[in-house]
Image (cartoon, rainbow, N blue to C red):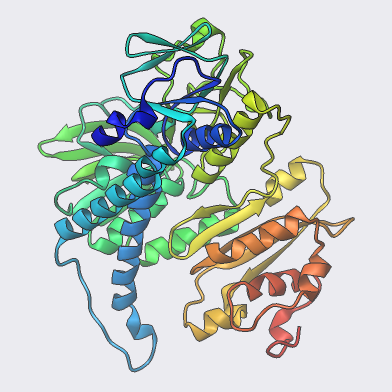
Length: 478
């Protein structure tokens, strides 16, 4: 980046049409959108260029998860009669080095190297930024811009547990920076980050316990939570759900977590506690309150459907807001914010057909309303649940872990939502997202032609399950 900062393309140009604070996925999306519309943009760095996803989130975690899947695949080859294989972690430091190399490559290629191609964007990385009247103050000088977009992202949150500051802990970032493979870990939290990383570390050979207040993936369907819990336990992961976090402490070099489960106190011990209980917005030092920008209980910026904050002219996007915490939604929201701020747009944030994915194995992916959400919204709900032992692809792969659940309106037959838990199920969820986006009924989905021996064919079978027993159908007869 030093050479880039010296390039003429990044020299200060005076006043700007738009100032964007944060140079991650949301910040780049906002800046590029405005620049393509002919506007002059000040893109102000906030942390490492590239933000969470490429540096410490999606990219490093998913490459490590894939490595763990390769390891597990070799260890479970015996599910096919006549096969036998063994695998283990031979060099943890080599895995970490390869992950770091991938991160550095993508950070350079997909972020730093893009800037010279946008003459309207000036990149400034001169210190903390602060909102002021008429623009932004950064590095001791004022950047004048009538519109500002805050895209400073988020970070792992530290739960409010007595003694947690003194106990040996990791978070989702530092876990992927360890120089050696730990013998044991306790993950606090059963959300998507916790379950992904817990399974990955267990497959690498670490003894893993997940402790959560309610259940795994509490925002998705209970059938999926139960199935995922069974899957993880079958792999040797201890799952302690319905727990209350009472205290944490250091015991020599190890960590102790005291919890209450079913009215009984328990002490759980491991090398480290891994804090995956949520994320906090990076809003400190921005001067939000002074500018009249409201935040919620976790410090996230409140935005309207136009991505504007409670202060006219100041917009926000990405993990720093109270909106969906996914990188693609951060980029989407930032694009809307940029268009609405400086390109005369009047676009509204719409996540009705937003797909989401949890990269466990089996993967869990969904879109639309859960059964509980649909009932709360006033729908007369009908559901279908299809286990993967009814899907030919799963039978051929000798891996029937998982299920598909669809939610529909009984009166209109219109699909309202669904979730797929299946190996590589994430690659099928977009079909369901398109079905919801265009208002398909379960009947229409069930009559759609799908290719045989694919996971996505399970959607057709799940749709047919509303009206018939698909176990009684011959291959492709539906």
